[in-house]
Image (cartoon, rainbow, N blue to C red; front, side, top):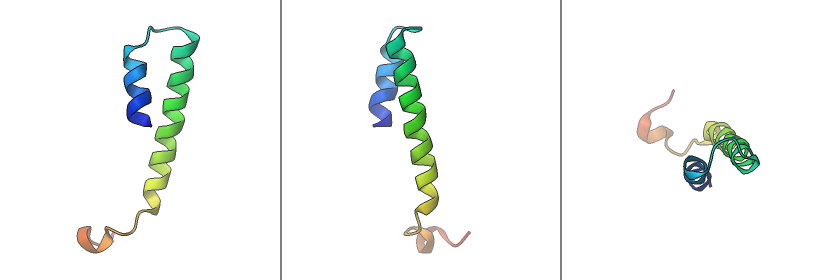
Length: 50
C-alpha cells in the first residue's frame, strides 16, 4: 500500500487536495508499518537476540 501511494504521490501535482490527502495516507501507512515491525520475532534466531 505504501509503495502505491508513494508512487502516486510522486507523480501527482503538488498543492492539490488530492496530493495532501495521499501524503497524509502515506504517512499513516508508514507509521503502521514502522510500529508493526517491532512485533516481528521470527527472525531473531537467524539475526541474533538483541
